[in-house]
Length: 341
Image (cartoon, rainbow, N blue to C red; front, side, top):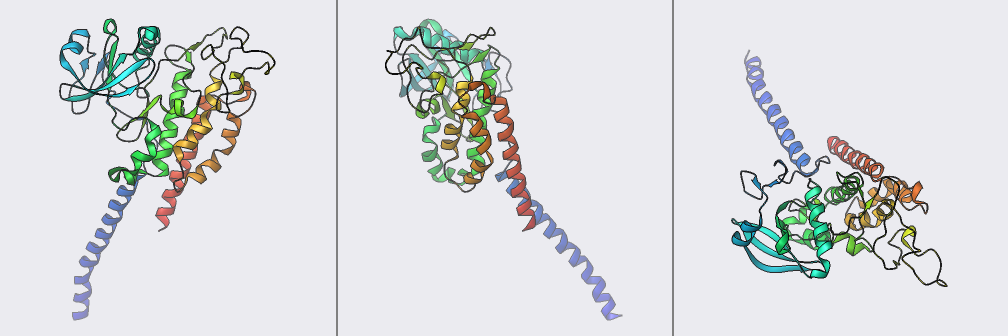
């Protein structure tokens, strides 16, 4: 009888231990799942009505700022960037950090206003958030992202607080964001648009910003010509383009014996953006553990992106579908590996 009572008394202890073990496994699973989430679109405070914005710790959406508010309530702190079209200033509005973009030269006013028009028309999770604009002063205001462009990705991920984010998951999500933006751009509310400020890798990457949670948003929209429904293509400026980064159809087709002429240069379409995807993705992936496996899975779609005939290249949507399938497959494979441990 004594032994029977001992067994009965030990049963609750065993049950408690099993429950504790199951709870610990659940906590571990949730922790790991938080480290390696499935691909989702960035939220970025995009729950505001049209022509409204919400920044940082703001609880409510407010209308875009107009000239009087921009002149009276925004304080410029320092210049953080400068290009041919505009200068960018880190500024402060209502205790929130913002970026003020000011026209650099009257010679580029049309480019500046085109960029502002695109920024207004393309507001989405894929594009930096517009805060306000004052066209007569040559100024518009956007959300400020202190990590800057993805050109500084390696340096940002080397910062101690971000070092744990330097994984294939983080980097592949950035590549997904890039292709998702192209998908959006090629079927945008204002027609099929082409990224013309993309004549080399650095210039292409400088058109985007890194968010604090390491997502990618388009920022510089000054050069997005439209491919019209009638099949009329675009030309990215009146000058001759060179190098391996640009698509073959963007190169002068008549050889060195004939001087370049913008009038004789054929136009092209959004498939020029597809040609450049493999190089951009290669930069974003870097050399972290798992990147070689991603390159292996993407080999065929990237080979298709590099077809000489633009008509044989996939659409941005088709590339995005492959990227998402590869991402989900790798996450699932990693989950199965963890479950076996």
